[in-house]
Image: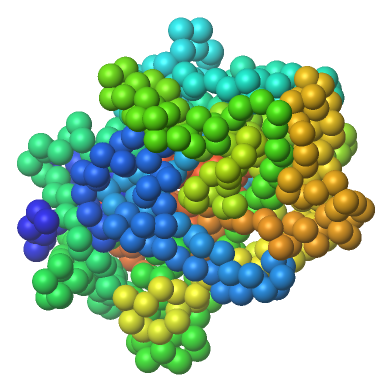
Length: 544
């Protein structure tokens, strides 16, 4: 690993979607010494950069924290795998490559909750500044000068095109840009892919600035705790690969960007959390903040599988000859199935006509498997995944012990409210209705999961409890808010501790209506703006 400097101006913990942006923006000032700490390795594996490489990197401890949830009553007592990136780029190095900003109303709602500076009119330009959208007819509000490359999928599959047409026949309109003014509709996902290769946060924001003399990117450095002295964060304690611990000093600020699981865990290990719970683990309390680790939200997906009369990707990858052909096509031209994102086609739909905005999201995949990350089924099939966009259920992240090497306890509490249960069941029924509509219906030979004999609210809900899984969007565990009970204020400063901020999906007061990679990058850029503004304000001379 790069040797960690003992003293920096800013220490950023976690080189994920937000952390890479923060390190890029803060180190643009040559007078600011920035250290970016990552617990995982460098992103040197070729599987990280091949779009379909998520089949190799997810659930692989070389790249993934490989978290497991606690048994969840809402899922019939099941535990789930929760992959989170442990590598430069974080989860942006192993996610499904889907670029989704969320609904503009999400951010306006944050502002209405008292979070000044977070309305769409204020964060929209940040999204625009981060991206280069590779489309010749780019609409207003889409960026052309940013580091993150966003493209339309080059891959198309007939079964997915049939789904779009069937959805349109059910009254859902085609939307060429769900990241534009209106999210609602069906169409093709936009991807963080550039010329057939993954454009992770590390590729977009670290690689171009890796030679900056004032930026140190340190891998294989797990942060054990934030060092807090007299109510101020003065640095962090890390464990190096050789097992030796080391204290690193931050002259200005420490910024946690370790994600919705890592950031609350580090705060609690540092003595910021529920005082009684911390004392129970023998941790010295620095600040009583009982909401640390609470407010956990995630998108739960129900994955419906339909057997097909026509070939799908399941058939394309079945033989060694086909696999060799696919690999050769990618090696020579950067095209073909190896450029495939986790899903090709989207649907942002409403379960009720009285809703102002969509409340469910569809991911349509020209393949099927028992669970994401496993081998495909030995028959022709495709998948309709449906998830509720704004779940009401709230879970928790708590410490298992005071040992930083022990994973925290993750309790999602899925389907804990009637609204969540009703919405997921309604989404499943919409998926079934689309499957019964031409030109999709004639391509389907059999409903495989769930089968057609699963009928009625109670049976569908029971099936969903036993088969639904995460779609990898944990958020909310270091809630932002204007109230004293919030973990961070709207400038992302940790309440009760000076010189410490959090910037990742954990700060979301409510989860966004879509995938979380793009919002995490926006949060990182927003944080960097605020840090720079606050530092300049502090540097101004006092005027009598």
